Image (cartoon, rainbow, N blue to C red; front, top):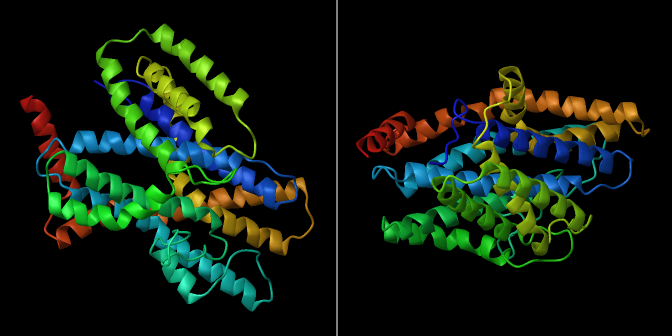
Length: 364
């Protein structure tokens, strides 16, 4: 079976590496773009990798946890809500406060509107929703539209998954309906460089988990998948069109490359423990880095006006340090937040659900 146990293979640390690399790509790319060093489309590629990881890991989570009958769409929803909002809510407050404090001292950061309506709309994940309920992004949080899209995808796909498993039909339909509009509207490819096809990418990655799970059971030839990894990665890099990275036609090769990497990593356990710890450390604050880096950089660039390599490196370093502190204060506590919410609504905690899942596996 497909395993993400770091003691068994390198798949878990490989996924952590991709998560950390994607966050750093977004951070460094934005530093170059907003710091006067030309234009790079690497941040878009970072977001693509985030969506591939998200689709694959949500499929893994649903497939594993839903085997226990006690695990319902409510448990899944609480966990996803806690995972997103434990860091997202403080990040929105951080962005608003930083913008207002700098404005108080006469420093204007370039960005989108900063007002109560936009703040509330972004807090409710309505930024750039293509309907009358949509609002603009808030201040320097332009990159967070992808977080809103992912949030809507979680609840839409999660609810539909439990419908297909024959559980909580009415409740799942009530959840899926309001969260379907943004992903389904974003399903078709939009203008070059837009994020309109990201739901399609997410679904491809979601499906790749089940294909990988089936292939693993057939005991695949690892040499073949090593070759497939080289060919698909090279093909994606060759056909990648900078500026049009987010278009639908460029997704299949990216997902195939990721799929091949997962299958290869299932057969090896070679990453040294020290390197694995470093990768995990960088991955553990990747979400916080994605949330706050742009505000930090724009603040630095608004105060330090002369472009230089030193300014660029300083902005990247400060963004990473602040993101790490932010993760320690907020992001890392999402499990505790989920358990608190579950206790308040009478649902079993994560520990009890994991025990039930393990008992189910032992019974098999």
